[in-house]
Image (tube, rainbow, N blue to C red):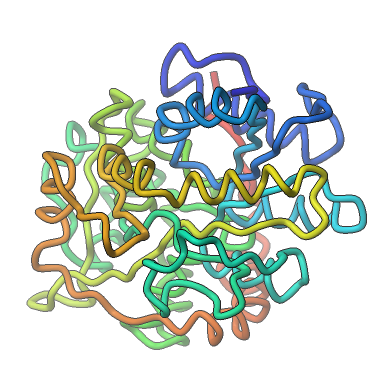
Length: 363
């Protein structure tokens, strides 16, 4: 499996190098030149351990290397958009609403993989342009060694104790960042959500381009609270050696904590350079063989015929127990996204001069 970064010595190095490489690649300075015959995967961060586990078998089986570019979910779509007239990637994995954005922008090609048949209708496009690959939930995360009392409500994050120790990813470039707006708007109403985020900004240290490296910053005690998603947070804590704990917040005291599904979706890039192998890669990643390993990284299989099982699967069930799940209309989110991003920049960030695209932890 060919990476755009050096092999990982640790999760920290991986997050730093992969993110930095992806940013360089976006501006035409990729440290890895894609070779003829490779199949290229653009992917949102969080699934590194799964790819490391399953892709070597695919490479051996097909006699082809998989080159991976990892970045924020919006960033990988933005890069594919820039390259639309001369695509460099074959397959994309990203979060909503960015997978819907890619579809509406004409970046994706219909491909009805035989392994999509066990994906629920609601979790895939009717024409086969995308399907849920790994199901997941939006969450926040804390450093449990530094936060002695778990926040229970959104208002708790306004406590002066968190001043300068909060961060969340930029909604314009990261699916988990957009999820902050989606969730607060769902539980508070849109106007109240932006009022809340404006108040919260007083405690925000900065905003990151992607979400994955926020876990590193939490573990290093550069932050106390950040946004994330359940799969990535649990995987980083258990398999990445990072000190963090996912939490879910309630609208007000006495209410149930609330979240929504935030799945990784997979799609075939239109006119990709190695499309035939791209289709095989999708078939493989959606196979029972690979889907059965999704719980190992605390994800939920996209296929209904593969159970959420094992010790890690039970940990996911326990984490989500008692949490209220709300439905999300992703078409409505897509319609609102441009206005939300503009409003976030004009009313939440305003003229603060705050960093909006931190790309890696400082050394």
